[in-house]
Amino acid sequence: MLVVDDNKVIRQLIRVNLELEGLEVVTAADGVECLDVVHQVRPDVVTLDVVMPRLDGLRTAARLRSDPRTAHLPLAIVSACTQHEVDSGLDVGVDAFLAKPFEPTELVRLVRRLMEQNAQGRGPGDGEDDGRLVGGVLGGGEAERTSRAGG
Image (tube, rainbow, N blue to C red; front, side, top):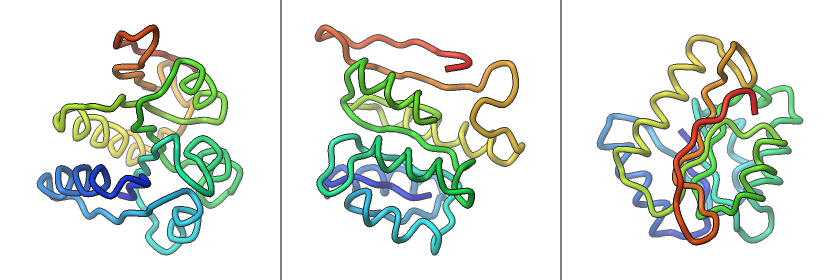
């Protein structure tokens, strides 16, 4: 599991909640650092913030998708995103979204689902419903929960 966020407190919050569930977690402070460590760590899932210095989460996701070694790696955006950012994330192949602030149980459930799909060999776009979840997407000042199939 690789957690990428420029906010140290958020990185620690995500890391601790996932470690309490028995997951091994490595963290990175931005997209550049993520791209440096992803091949060493070989995570089951990567969570990305959208707004980060040097390389944002959407451009990081696009680079991960364009590399054959990481093209099928499950990617989740964990950020306070706009609908435009969600749409852009879907365009580059992000598998799931979780809006900040989030409940720790939502985070764990999302990561576990992505890990299960990965273990079953279901990558992005496989099957009738690729399981993309848009959780608490911000739009017009209100949070909404929707599932989106087929992107």
